[in-house]
Length: 420
Image 1 (cartoon, rainbow, N blue to C red):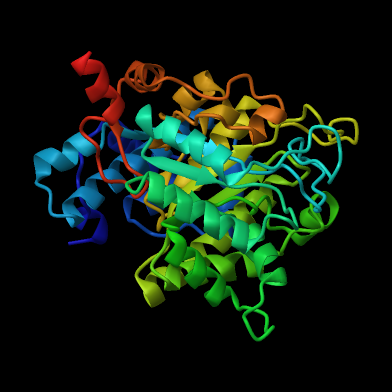
Image 2: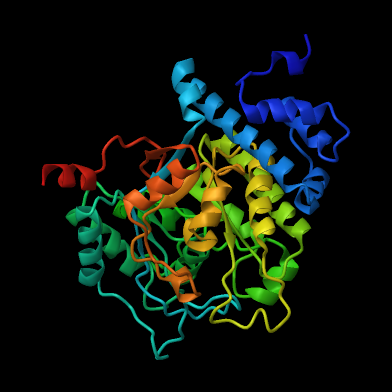
């Protein structure tokens, strides 16, 4: 019996399409064959996928990978076949608050419209009571997660953020704190000293934040790992190897983290595939060494309001590009459980379409998001019902989750409404 004959059958239209494609002379038949045999696609094969114009065939392949991944994860967790089949039609979402405590940043990223220099008009730093008020309000509205990222502000270091997390956990002990990009962790480490004046290690930075109440880590600051692109667009940011190292230290501490890619900042499509390949190898290492790792990958799209990238000749992403980034991510990142369609950057309609191109997560309500909004996003948050309608409008089932992908059957917000 061949490996193909032994494989898990999930009996969906996308599986049937993949089988037919594998047996055809189509330009993507190589990908279909490897996907069916559960063989990893190479970097070179990923480059063929990111360059293809066969967008619908690519979407079918990615959708099949999404369905099979959901099915196999459910079986691995001990669910029966009926539940596993149901999981193939489910899309995750959550109720979350984005808290950006400061927009003051001494770094320089050409694509950023959020950051302000110290004393510049529009610069702000929240007091801890002000930040806590926002978290308490969001929790009252059903939020299960607070996502904290901000600028590189020399006055907002580990002491400030440690006190902030402690205060959040004191006021709202059951909310999940997902906080700090690898770039921020490196920034904290540059300034942090112990009582003897010695510089703290990254491990000690994480120990202090975890003791304060840090629960997981987002995936920002990755942008595009290509050194050439980083040198031009965000020269102050840590390089790919240090970004990966910091996430792997987080994994060694038992923290789940996310990973991102910001496309449309002057990179070539092949550099996006290189980015995915670096993440895939890093995930292999983390899972083998620490039994912890990246849980979600989020392909992001640059917004151009407030920066001069278009004037400098940067080619903006097309809708095809955005869908290909989602689909190729799902196919290439075989060791990532989840691919997120971040609606606040894709837009609601494109995010909905992405659910048929391999994405299984629509993010969340994203209350009070400031970073993408500053760059021209039209909305800062969505209501629960709108998120659910987007998912159900794609003929899928919406399932609310917590940050680490446990289902929430009924949110606090829904319960409160039901009692009114």
